[in-house]
Length: 210
Image (cartoon, rainbow, N blue to C red; front, side, top):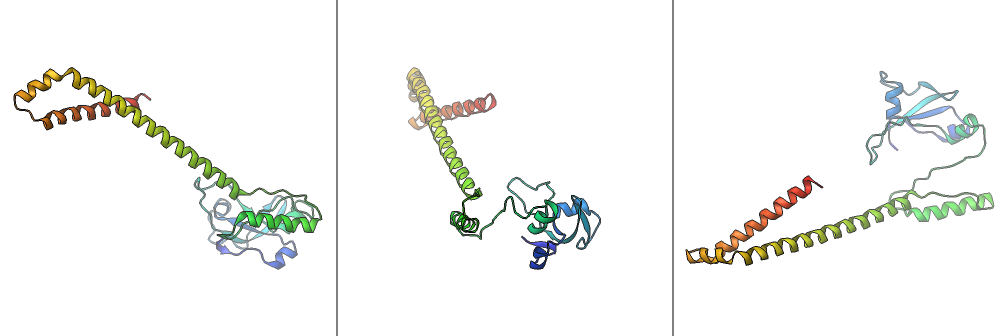
């Protein structure tokens, strides 16, 4: 996380359950549209006043810019002052780039089980979900490619049969053209042009009325 103003929480603020808060850029624009600097300003989080100590740069997601207002509090402050409890309902863990998320998940589960004396947590690995989605997308792309190839082959066979019937029925015309000086390449060019026109017209009509 990078900051355009201020910084994140320090150890003293975490240990003392300090009433401090970090905003994202979108929240800063919404709450303080005319302020040049917002570090030191006070906002209400629920009924608790909290001093702004930093503004995090907004990250673009795959779906574009988010309109959600995001604020971050020290987890000790959130649990003790806002929720009135000494435990956490959930935590979010981000691993370093290139580190295997499944390995990190196993290590985290082992650590929590050792500390709690039993397995009383569950994890939700977003990386596994993304990999599953990527595999599904890849399979779908292969399926659509196969359908497109089959459609092209069937369409090509159809055009081939039409042109074969056309040549068979127009042997008299071909003979007359050859007799008056047309070359075999001229006749071939004529039928190729007709085949291309049939494909273009068929494709245009198919895309228009699909």
